Image (cartoon, rainbow, N blue to C red; front, top):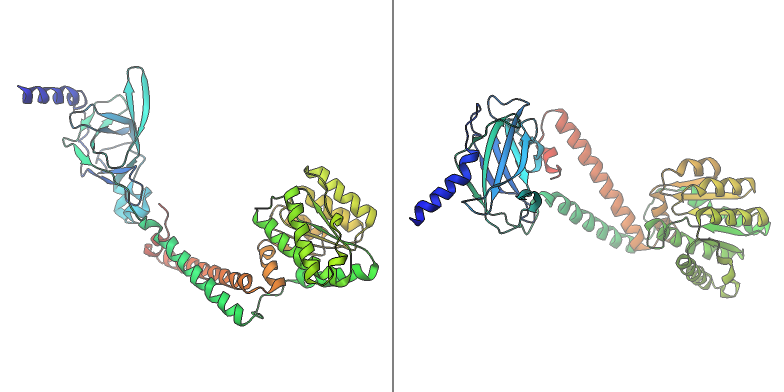
Length: 410
């Protein structure tokens, strides 16, 4: 009696969705755990129905119990969800366009008038059914089989293996060049005109008896452009101390001000001129963008510094500062990775470091082995990426897609 009751409940649960429509049930259905994930998704794949149209819809039913109740994510158009959409899982085979594939990571549970979205959980047993119908209100043609699957998390995402190999390659190359730089500090770096002109600009300030102004943008101290600017400031401060010239550093953030003071002070000590260091010359201007710009412009107009250095990340204040410095007759050298501001600096400054030249400046000026080796290692990495792009373009042009698949994202 108990067995018969279970069968009756199963029939009552499934019979409402077993009505046969005009379409044949989906064929070649397979359900499996999604690879290279945390166990919170699974794949349902099936062949395209021979007579499916744009008005054909597939419905996937999910349950945690073989007897139901079965829940669904809704009707899916036959014009969507193909194996070809998941190239890193199914490859680049031409027949993938003849197969549907759906990545299931949640399903809808309806409780009375309320509904909630339940996520697929790892190490949980799920039972999957699939049907097809013509039109959203058509009769479902159900596949007769119920598929059982248990999604599990993976320890290693094999689809990210290419990134791991690239990481190892870059790490080995950078460490190798750091060792080379330790033995040969004169390792070749392409000449950067703006950095070569820095000594001339500071020498001009010394001859004219005027000050040097340094501005390091409007990013916080933990941002990469600001760190690069602080490194350059140390080099400039050391040369200014050797030339016995006054250096002014305008700051917009109190933390950057303190770091700048320590950097300049240390540079003066390294140059053997600790007595020439003036703490008040590394000052706080304003924390507001245009108030800061107005304060620095006022200094330019009053003191007319002989050389202005702009290094870091800049916004709309870049043109205000550089145009004022240009009208004051200062030699101006700028460096930024803010691509929207580079045209303004090129127009108004004598020399401009573009993009990554800002990061290369620290290694270029200090010749410190770690910075120098890292810079050369990154250049080799970029060269390798360019070669991969060229090889991939050629392979794709001649119809071989296997090489491109290696780098295809999930």
